[in-house]
Length: 593
Image (spheres, one colour):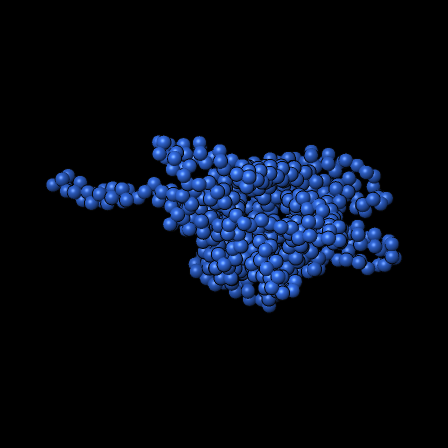
């Protein structure tokens, strides 16, 4: 009786599974599969962050539910100063960076000033420079004690006081803005490039003055681009670690990123306190994203390109052409040229040296020889390159499949996957590093103190960038090509390999190189996750700097690190010019036809 009744009990369960499998389409399965992977990378670390924040830190792992971490983190008046410093630093950086990048974007995209192509290329090169090296260069330039610029000023004037001091809040804002303004240009440039100038001309013909046209026509049309740029710059300022660590710490200007890192690097790490402090960082970033979405919820109202009649027309500057070019050249020389000059010049001297002035030590290549034969450096190069390559491959593979699912296979529910993949853009990299650390200290997965925990953090960090590349590429390919492949009997894998992959190859290469460059120069998350045998270039540079060894050796390490990154970005620029020339040629042929 038992043998007969057992199959009868399992039959309803089997039929339920069969019905569920029959009703679940392959597209839904792909959506679920990709959502689970993206959810693992995003939800698990953030969940661990919340869990650690609201449990007692026993020293042997999480204890019972407790608010003691928040009492410890926020129970002192000094936290108000940390809040103030963080908001002032992020807001000041966002404003100054926006003004600098906006000026470059306007000159390059909307005017006929000479040298626009050069400015565009310089902006891309600036993007490749690691923020840590820029902070080091400004310290060697404007430090009141060792900065060569202040030393030169004292020698020329006889003054005992420095002219400029990098160890101040304005100094921190300038150091970060000089590094991030190319990002503002890259974000604002496309919006200015696609802005139809005829709307401004119509306002002028209606009797509107220049300032009225600016505030009533131009700026309202550009509102989504402006808000998104300021938002991203604010988030980048809030999550910045290099400048607060190198410049803010000596000046005792504490911000949340350095406080979080300090809590985890003590002799007895306070992971719960670090998690509680991270809540403020996360809250500010999420709040900024909320206000941005609220302000740009009617994005279609800002569209200006609606048909074939659109053609961008540059603004003729007349006599101002060369003065504008000179002004832009001076800004690039100050923000990009001066730090690079400092790094390169100092790399050839053992002691501190002023560019183009007599030095106390001879010109030498010994710094480069020391770095190239430094065992930990060679291991860090191997780890950084291997990590960057694996991260770029994983990000591009995951996001291009996810983008195809959201755009083609399951567009109705695809917004969930898209939101999951893009959500890390609002999470500071410091929080991602800390939360990944907390998660894999608790999970029974042996990733801690290995290269794999770094890879997990990198994939989480750069998923949003891969998703944007992939989505923009797939939307440019008409669905008819995939439908034709399906009618011809091609499977999904064959359609990917023989149809989509060849068409998306240029974008895939560009996206891979972009993520590779970001991963090679990463520091903010890595500083939480590196172990004895998993140091990367950023952490090695930071260690050499803070140990107070030879500044020449640190600069030589920076130059060696920068050179291949600049070469990669130059290759991206060459690729960009080829693609632009091809599209211009296709556009000219369509006009003739």
